[in-house]
Image (tube, rainbow, N blue to C red; front, top):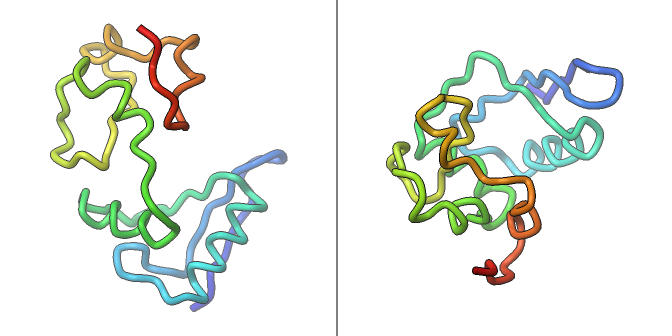
Amino acid sequence: MPLKVKKLHPLFGGEASGIDISKPLSAAEVAEVVAAMDVYGILLFRGQPLTGDQQIAYAQQFGPLDLGLRKINKTRVKHRLGHEALIDISNEPSYLAHAIQRDQSYSMFNDAPIPS
């Protein structure tokens, strides 16, 4: 079944259905997801809970993983997700004290060294 996307917001975001992201995708499905991301920016796949390993396998189908935020928070926050390639972006109060500050965003998605 081909990927279907329903627009969720006038500017961005789509609800995706028609493919099972818990299993390896075909090259055609990967291309459909990439094209949908180009249009919608964010895709929501409802009702497809993934294990950490499945989430990583899904993401790796689109290229190498960027551990940007993990590099910044490596020693600041106890890692609770069980895999180095996953990061917890949460509003849970126990994690707020260690949240990245806005002025640190320059280093979130590149390999530049973090100033002391």
